Image (cartoon, rainbow, N blue to C red; front, side):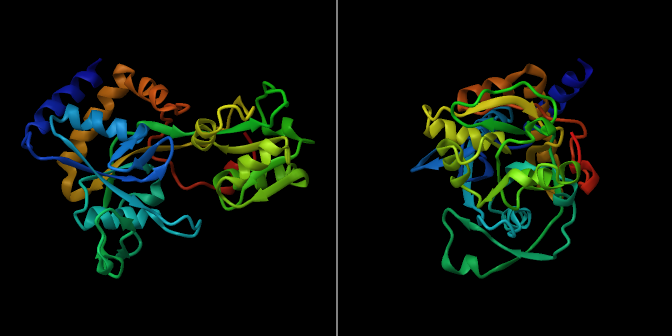
Length: 304
């Protein structure tokens, strides 16, 4: 109760510092269903609804700066988001992974901007001096689970070892890939199929190319929304490794980040986030402790 009261007091104090006419501009990715999606002039998704609620609690209208990062697994979206903030394109960025390596002062001094709404040709050539990123409390965790093929039962199990003998699909160069690859010395690798990131993972599962996939839950939610009759089944298994996601801003805008953080804390205390997730079609996973995930060691991938 004391924490909630302190957050409410901080929220009231800091939100009053900005004019009610001044929009809160939040950077969101434009095609990450069901988290954030731009559809014409409108938008949808869990991250967008959370941003709207935060803006409302701050007493400010919301403006969204849509952007798109590269699909290449070797790209550096943390630097691109930093560039957007450092170039003044937005006040906060939502849906940002609260990982130690992606916060604080970046290793690079400069970065280029990603594609964003309203970008001019010269914007893609500019280098932006990067700032220091500071986070709000998290508003969700990016949980990893197991989805079964049509006609396959959804067994109740506690460890991935119980999938031994089944054909497993996983997207290459992802955290689920690293988990499956290192799990118990590679005990699952004999029946693993690696696929490129995107629709092929679920298309193959729907065809019966494999029996199960290990994947981030929001990816399954996106597939389910497009293919409600696919027959895929989400199990109750959740891997213990799960990065938290929240808002980030520049350290030079610390009062605003604090105010947004107080709004997130209020939403968490009031139980608002699961309800927003249900409305937007997201399988909700609450934030984990610690709020900021330290660098992962290979040993953490070897068991569950």
